[in-house]
Image (tube, rainbow, N blue to C red; front, side, top):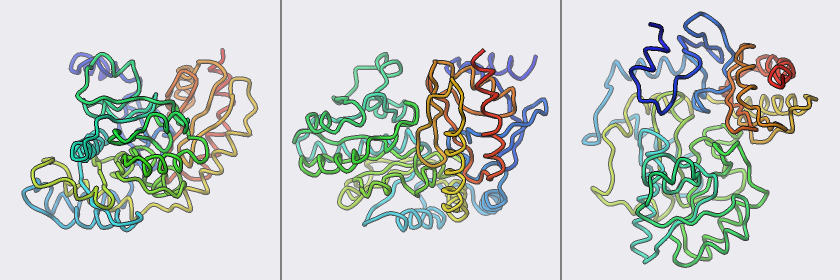
Length: 388
């Protein structure tokens, strides 16, 4: 029985059986169990910031495992304090941090933090965006505007009103003095790497300020250099009330963060929330290695090269390119993203069929100019094969 058959028999069927079984990685390259080599332009869903087997990550994690691997929240340790301090140094204004294990958990913490504010102020509902994705636990799922994954698990404990993403007028109409918080992604990730219109986040900040609602920026995918900035909201000159992080922060190790700005960061009292593994020393050491190694100048340079290269591809199947930094979607004129993903895999590249007409391209942030050129050069033939 091969590994795929064993997977199918051992696991719940919610993922299906993935098409590739990976055995090892180095830099932006990975090898499957049969020895085939791929250029990884998925990066663990925008997570493997430093690629695979990066020396800084290996050293930091190995050193920390050899020192102390877990403490629980009954005790503190220096890596979690150093990481919190480092994150705060990269942000604007006073804030406080809560560490979790994942993006969903970070958003769950944000949901509870906002809910405590709302109940104190007598507010009753949330606002979020259609097609937004914030996670799959009940609190995070209640904020997720994807009917296909949401509706079968309702009803949810608190009302959430959904508005079209990028429509500032619709947002203004939905947010009243009874609104607890607005949850938004600076760019919608799972919807197809969809950036908002210029000025949308500034408008959202103004709407929340005028009504007293909190603005929550879900930067699970967009932060830690992925968009070309440490945090995507910084490109808009907007500071949220709550910020959530995960994915790229740990460079492949599980960690999430919920950050509350100003008074919001002091809403939780002792016992209000917790996590046994949150702020794990090994994950914090990994995150410190990521933050200490990433070069935003390099990210910006190769991101411009990747986008320019993809935009120069003249192919009838390619409709356009959208996104920010090293977080792009190739937009197709037909719903053939699954075929593009397969053709890319056959050609030795890993990309992600994100939506029927959108392919996610999100390589590790250490991808080289040469590797970008290799992918761009191969992309027309990949599209031609997918169009057959």
